[in-house]
Amino acid sequence: MKRIAIIGAGASGLFLAKKWSGREGGEVYVFERSRQVGTKLRASGGGKCNLFNTSVLSACYNHPEFASKLLEKVSPQRLWHEFEEMGLQMVADEEGRVYPLSQFSQTVVDVLSANLEENIHFEMGYEVRKVFSQDGLWRINDYPVPFDNVVFASGTPANMIPRNRKDYNDYLKDFNITVNEFQPSLVGFVIKDYPKKLSGCRVKVIASLYQGEKLIHSEPGEVTFKDDGISGIVILNLSAYYNRLKDKSGCFVELNFLYANPDYDVQAHLRKYHSLRGLLHPKLNALYEREPFDVKKFKMEIEGLYDLAFAQVCHGGIALDEVDDRFALKKYPGIYVTGEMLDLDGICGGYNLFFAFASALLVAEG
Image (cartoon, rainbow, N blue to C red; front, side, top):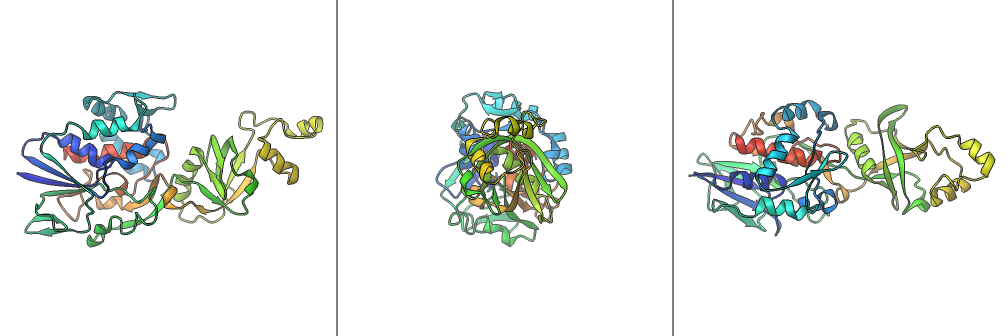
């Protein structure tokens, strides 16, 4: 009888358990430190669970070559079929973001965790602190059962308050592998000399990330002005590209508030109407009347990123060259790694959950 341990009952861990449910000759034990499964999965997509995207582009990941090789093995269409076989009905929006038909994340958690066969065992509220080899098998803490294989699927400390992320994934310290420091990604920017009177303002813009004179990335979207910085999906995407810069000095965000008509003659408007109240959000207009600015090139100097507690995912993790093409650790045969624990992160729109499920699928088959 082969025994497999899965550390983590998040997206990857639950997907693996579902795939291995009922498999003959195998007992699967899922270790989860919290009291419920799929905690982050429930929060995905604003509670709707953005599973993946119908068009996943390798260029939207921090390591596009690695992502490209993954996409050769697992396409979005294949993942759609996998979920349909599990009984999940899905729908894609106009931007290709795939959600459960119910538009409710609990539906996904229920499909992955319900009706599992007797060979799947859950150990809830169980924190894994040590994984070690003994007599050719793997042991977890002082758990009485040894394992032939172990899957690291415990995710990252993204979206966790400092108290909860203390010693998180501490068991990795016992392995001689490269683990790049976790940094918050898909997160808002803290802005230097921030105009606090804009707090609470939400506007549609074209947002651009610059480093000096060099344009790093630009896209349209809605920006939310917070107490000391900016957020919104478009800003979260800019943060992913910001994280990929080795040197982050001299970076700023440029906002074009005339996103729908970038050629509009602002000076002619001012000469005729003596105000921009007909163009700008009231809070922006009030700021302009006190301190005039270029409404097409409103620059905000980046001071840093918001804390991990506000991040959707992490940048960093186990280096990709530590695993083979089936996500097994090269130095430790029998141990596999999935999803966020690896140093691969993408933009918003289902990219990160796609990787979690796709990597788990390859581990399940391997």
